[in-house]
Amino acid sequence: MPPLFSASPCPPPFSAPLPSPDSVVAALRAAGCVFAEDEAELILGAARTAGELTALVDRRVTGLPLELVLGWAEFRGLRISVTPGVFVPRRRTEFLVTEALAHAPDAAVVVDLCCGSGAVGAALAAALGRPEVHAADVDPAAVRCARGNLAAAGGRVHAGDLFDALPDAVRGRVDVLAANVPYVPTGEVGLLPAEARDHEPLVALDGGTDGLDVLRRVAAEAPRWLAPGGCLLVETSERQAPAAVDAFTRAGLTTRLAVSEELYAHVVIGVRD
Image 1 (tube, rainbow, N blue to C red):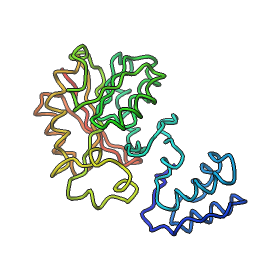
Image 2 (cartoon, one colour; image 1 turned 120 degrees about the vertical axis):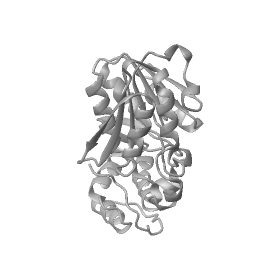
Image 3 (cartoon, rainbow, N blue to C red; image 1 turned 90 degrees about the horizontal axis):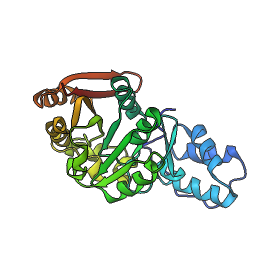
């Protein structure tokens, strides 16, 4: 399903009960929701009463992201819980997981850095069976959310700044290091859709002057944490990809760029020799 977002202004919420699916679709369409039919189906499935349905639609038409209205986001077939103030996992990031699994289909130790909701770690855990999973984020709200999403996989979620959050016992043992770092240039954060700009934490969006500040920090330190043959994967934009590849190469990683035209996703992959 395409991203269910619209930057169009929304009308004031309504308070009357909605007796039919057509009414829900009409309200969402009037609010500028491009995929009103798809969103209506999900909202109708989540509501147990007419009053609850009205409340859910009210939240959506006032601009709350659909995933926060529902309380979950779909990611590689999983329902990932999302809570207010936590970065919503993007469908394009599924490509990062696909590339990680292609490189390390038998990975035993996985790290999800800048984990947000923990969607990447949860998806890797589901595909790999029962790897040792660690996740980390500097945002306390993200840490709480990720702990819920990774509990079933036995994942351990740590609070702190990048590698400082990880236990020393993981150093030199990581087969897959997935880092969904913020990569929006500071000057462009204000240009993001309102759903991101108004409802997601700045720390998960702002990547510094050129958007690559956190990426460079991760690339520089990653070789000390990767196992021999282990890989670092980071999502970036098409425009930033050459500089991101250079940062990986300077860190001593054997580097390549993977691109998904369908998802408009660009993932830099670096392997420790």
